[in-house]
Image (tube, rainbow, N blue to C red; front, side, top):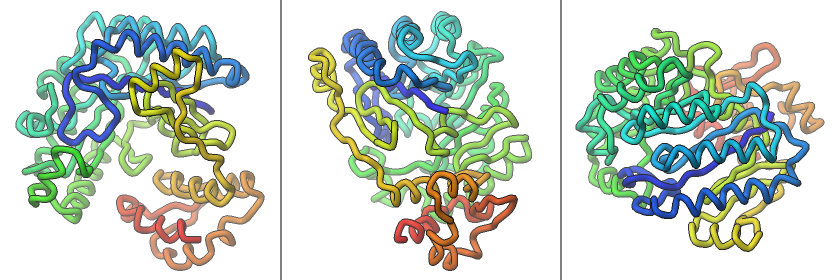
Length: 370
C-alpha cells in the first residue's frame, strides 16, 4: 500500500493553535503554487512509475480555500503520471466556512470520495476563541452540501472552559451531520502560537482533566457505534481512514508541495517550508527537499513499534519477524519487562491495554531507549 499527500498551504486566517505550514493572506500565490505542484508531480514520475497508489490526501492549510479547479487539475495530473488504484480513497480537508455547492460538485466529479471536515467544537464561543472562521451552523450546512459521501469530522478536546457536555454536543452534531469517522484530538499549545499564552496563564485544562475528557468521549463514541482504531481516531466499521492507516503501518507515501514529507524505499525526506524557495526550486527543475535521511534498522524497528502501538490492533509479531528477521521480544526485552502490566498479547499481536492507550507516549519512551 502507498499513499500520496498534497499540501495546500493557504488559509483565510491562521487559527490561534495552528503550528502547521500555512500562509494566511497569500491566496494570490495559489495559482503559481499549484502550477509548481503539478510540475513537481511530473518531476518525480519517472522514479515512481512502478508504484501503485491506494490513497490521495489533500491537507493544509485549508485545501478548500483555493479555487476548486486547481484541486481537480491536480487529480488529473496525478492520473496522467501515476497509477492510482481504481478504488483509491481520495480525501480533501475542508473548512465549513469555505465550501459551496459548486465546490462540492467539482470535488466529487474529480473523484474525491472522502471529506475531512474541521468542526473542532459545536460551541460557537469556543470556535471564536480558537480563531476558526466558521460556526456550528456552517458545519451542518457543509454536511448537507456533501450529502451521502464519506465524511469525517475533527473534534478538539482540552479547550478553554470546555466541559464534557460540550464535547458530547460536538460529537452529537457530527453524527447528526452523517459522519462515519471522528478524529478526537487534544489541543496541543505549541510554543510560538497565540494560544500558548493561554497555556502559560493556566487558562487551559491540565493533562489529567484532558485525559478524563478523552475517556468520557471515548465511551460515548463507543455507545454511538464508533470504534477506536487509533488513539485519536474512531470510526464506524469499514470507515477507517486508509490513508492514515498506511502511515501507522509504516507504509510508503510521497508528499508534494511545501513542507510535505515522504517515506520511500527506506528514506524519509521533507520539502522546504519556504514558499518562495519551493517555487524557485521547482521552476529550475530541482527537487525542493531540504532534509533526507536513510532510516537505520534500529530506528525502523522503533518506528514500527511506535506506530503500531498507537493503534487498537497493535503490533503483529509475525510481521515484525518478517521485516527484520529478528524476534521482537528479544529485541525489546527490558522495555517489555518494565511495561508488562500495560501490555497484552493476543493472537500473535502485542498491544497497549485499552485503558493505557491514551498515555502510550510514556510507555514508548522505554522502547526508544533500547
